[in-house]
Image (cartoon, rainbow, N blue to C red):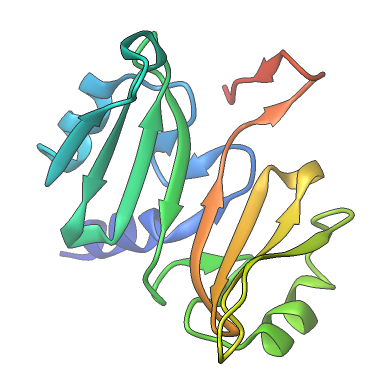
Length: 159
């Protein structure tokens, strides 16, 4: 029971540039299926040569795969996921901005994507850490992250 609990906790820790627990960027769809089972939903990207997206409703997680079926993006939307040991999802933008100051995520940008009565949708992005934090009406709803890049075109796959 303790091993299962430890593995589940490991799956909840976002490791910037590397992945989430045993779900490391660069693994294949078959590896993800072995780890999590069949996705709740799978959809091909509009250009069929561009990979696909999988959704796991039970884990509040989505992921994208490239044309070679390698994991390239993970997005999580449940407060049990941790960034540097801190639960950020469900918290307001001021709390999140204060917390990330000490996380060494690099330079950030904050962009309004759409405006609404209560604030709309915005993104707090960290290019150096390959991470976007998505807010709806001033509350963090999703953390999206991907592998680091050596240069504009070269992915640094975790070992």
